[in-house]
Length: 170
Image 1 (cartoon, rainbow, N blue to C red):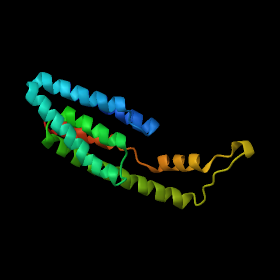
Image 2: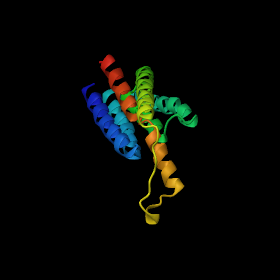
Image 3: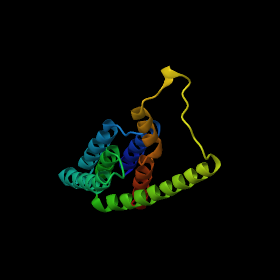
Image 4: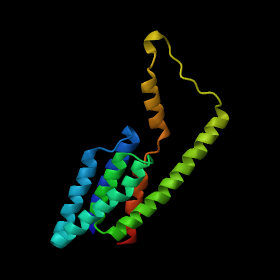
């Protein structure tokens, strides 16, 4: 169990850092979680551990894929939950982690909405100003930047959910 916790903490820190700084979770982080989880469960329980971990990874991917298809989260979040599914190794623990992540994510969204409402109240007009013709920014760049700022990084919620589920099952 100690190795599983170390793996979950390391992957979680990497995913949260990437999501907060780049607003993306790299494929390398999710792949490290997947291979690390499968490897850890192989050494702990052999072939049965790998089968259970792989099933848990598929379950994590499937649950979050629905939210991705509805536009509620990014593809990196889906792959991260699949990787964490392999680390957790059991669908029951994965379900607990997903429920924790949903609760934490909902709380984060509420806090962001409250913060935006407060910002709107105190700053009624926000303008993009260009210094000159050479500084004009295309609409594509502006809309992409606004979209990134409007999104909520979900890796912190996923990571905390996984950690709480692991702590509850120690």
